[in-house]
Length: 404
Image (cartoon, rainbow, N blue to C red):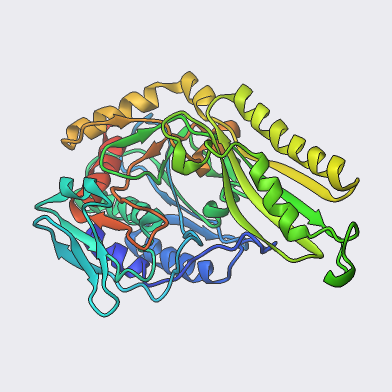
């Protein structure tokens, strides 16, 4: 089976995670894809296929030769973002010859080169798109498809290889993908998350990340007698947001620049809540951003009274570069594998995080490989089939070169 065919099967499963849920996985529907994948891995001949109660799926491709090659892991996540609808996904394959792509004639939804100029890089490619009403799910079902297809090719070819471990996780999009990952049981010297974007991306440094919430307690009273009594929590929430730097958001920053990202705001007179993610590559600046967020809460309380604003900040992950720097040979091997596949490595920082960032801090060095997708978390997400095929080749090359 070709990788894109496998991918199209996977996207038929809606797998959006839910940050408001306290269960793991956060949504039952992730388990449906996990069960399908478990059966598929078993049918390919993998062993030790285990789907645990929390939705983590592990499997082993045993070595087929006498070798002292390291045990290598490949990891991808099954859930999708809640930034766009996850069903019904209606993928289509476009033979792209340039220009805008009409995604949905009925709703006049168009993927425009003016909005996404890098679309022109893919002239001559076959591109998988949506109908413009949902995300596609290439983040990270493309990664799963690349890993499984690479293993299938490897088994069919009979090429010598060492022991390979596979791990598919739930809830990465809500920052919990590594929470219950069994690093010790995974038993790898190192691993790669296959969870990157455009062709050639190779990432081993990422943002330090935290989630931050400000809960506002208001005082509700009839508007007719509210003078000097009412504290409108919804208005205070917007005031809190205005205290943060307005030029340090995802829309105004790039590269190594950090940001405060307002992910939700809501409430009424009695109570309100603002939720943020805080990101910075530099640890000192990361700590300063968290301190500034907390200081905004102190300012609100100083103005409206103690207890008006409750701030909660929770670290999500840290920059993996600190850990990967001790194992740069795994980056060199990925670069060599890309070269063998005719892919130019594009090494750049992740303006976000992956499961690999946390796993690296738990003793499993875990940089990130591309899948080929673009516009993740968007109704305009797309996946060039040729880029996905290259991702498969890179995974296979990494495995094969380890036995040399």
